[in-house]
Image 1 (cartoon, rainbow, N blue to C red):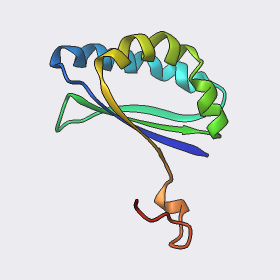
Image 2 (image 1 turned 180 degrees about the vertical axis):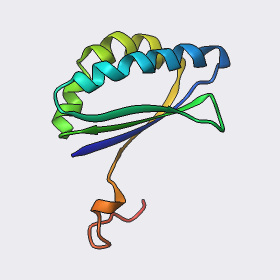
Image 3 (image 1 turned 90 degrees about the vertical axis):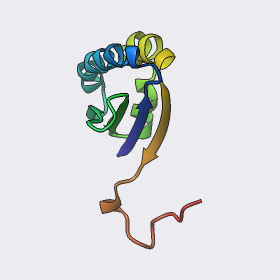
Image 4 (image 1 turned 135 degrees about the vertical axis):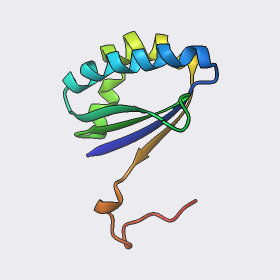
Length: 106
């Protein structure tokens, strides 16, 4: 599995609605892609200008292929990226790690 967490911040409050709408439209497209196990976008209750995307892909190769799909090319790149600041975090669930396999912070 390849898990990804994306933290998105919308600097201009006027862009929060359009970003939320675009993320809603992305979801069914992502879920229909080969190798997409789960894809969900969350909007923070504490900060409505912050969104978190939680993605699970069958493999990193499936996620990389996702970059060429309609959700990314037709919605994310033109409608979301120009309006946001983001952090992309490939991640590993702690439940799958043991102390011996966990990486130390850098």
